[in-house]
Image (cartoon, rainbow, N blue to C red; front, side, top):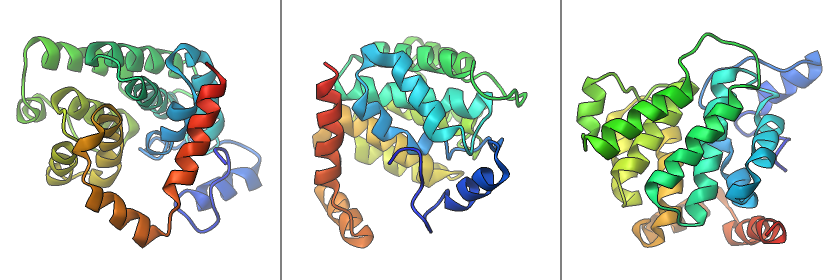
Length: 227
């Protein structure tokens, strides 16, 4: 389920091309980070090494670069901690730890260091109490590269305790808005479930014909089996 994209869905073409060539593709975009939420659900935070291993398995076939895998590990670790409703600083710390482990994977793509950017963000937001506009002025960009998207998403996680507000902020900021909104909104709503509008959930389920409750129950069952 986590290693093979569904035919016709986003990521399928890249997956098929990589497999047919017998080697991993070196993509650097947000596709690595935006697909890792299930891994954060099935792995408790104290199983970080296993989580990083599975991020490599799930994302490395299409995004085998240090920046993409580092970003994916950071987001997956944040999801894992959010489900446990960790304090914000602890959640960011394990995201940084995940990023540090993730950058040991994949091929060097000469991109900015995700862990270093997260450490900078943590200092700016948690110590200096800056706003998202302040961060934009200082160079934080909601871009399409993994080192941009993941760090912007986690900046929203640091700034917002309301999933709806964070998602709307991501959309209004532009860039890779859907990916960033999905990452930030998912992590924040795991910590503050009541802040994600029920109407939005119903619309997503209806339009995409999803059975989200069944999938969620299966993923949580895997997580509980590890505790």
